[in-house]
Length: 556
Image 1 (cartoon, rainbow, N blue to C red):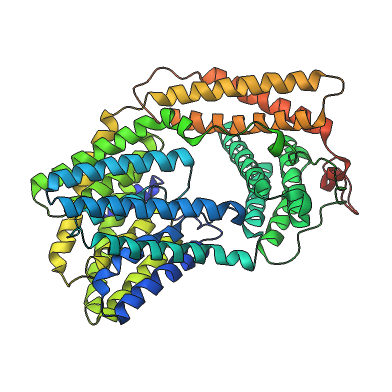
Image 2: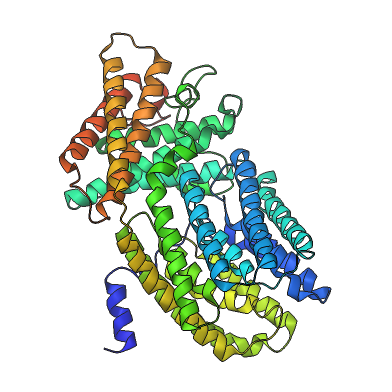
């Protein structure tokens, strides 16, 4: 079978689909471009392009947190910067103390496991731990002396601070941008669910996606005081409309939902959806977020996610040592390749392995095509790097294999900042390390089973059952306290979203006890029925009215 035929077969299997990019694909792309361009061009002007890698490492923090409200982003992004610079500091200090490749690979694998564990437990979002691991693993093999380490760390910290400023700056012009996008995404996803037709499985998936999008919007909105913010109060009305539509899709108008979503994505006023809620009146989930029990600490989730961290550590170590044994020359490439594979379950890991190999192979061809231009002048090298950096950031998420196509030449170009290297050796080494890292990393994923996926599902089931019992008891009361009913409803909704995610993750693993599928189905059905009953009972009049509309548009 020819290579093109093989690629067509994989694409037909759904692994190489070109999905629609994120609604805000340009935001991380422009942020990363602005964050990396300043240090790269500054070092070029100063004639110290060999030092550009350090501030660029900190500037890569600009890839993160673009979906978070600014009130929450500033803190989360600061932790990303500290994590990026901290990992770089450990790597540089290790590189300064030893040149033993076996020790360096071992340290890199341990750091990859720790970075995987923390990013998964905190749900930092894409690109998760891969960029952190790429930076720290690469730095392990940079020649260092102890005297150079503080200066290099200082450059990285400057790059991180600049990235933080770049990512926070849009908030001066559109302070509610992330909240508007989260609300628009919820409305669009719910509209798709309302309009969906097909098998029961398709409808269940659409319902789960709609419920998750609404839950994400609720979590996004209370990041600041919505009571004193008219814009957020208006967005809360729209999310409440979306939540009502999830529970009563037959009464909802998908075209109206989509129209509201389109208006939110612009810079105009918030769409008018009914009479304003009077100051002090509860609006479905507004008080719930302040009265609900606090979320579990991130480290409590780590116990359930620990097998994925162990899988990452072992896979990265074996991939690095296999590369060393074969004498390829850059074991950190194999290590990072292995680290990039590990997803929520084995099924997704297998898919990521295919995407990584295809993307890297095409990426080295792109590098081979562009490298003659990059070698013309250091400025050309920097501009080529920035172009691929922009493209890679724009494709994060739905098109991972295309993202990898751009990341591969970007990573190869940055190795030439210090000195021009043999392109043939770079290409052959990258191909070999990709194949070794993918093969060894996937074998490790099979060998290190994640039996705790079943434990996570059991925890999620128990949480849903407890939340459902509590909510049902409140509904049975003749006159329940509104704030208590709101809080209980929000807990039940969040528990149902977590249950669906846990069930999907467990279904993609192997070699574990039988999953309680019937119990999951019953818990989801009864839970959503109770949510619908709560919403019918407590729905404010403002959600049943729309100026000048009746019937279907009013969702009565």
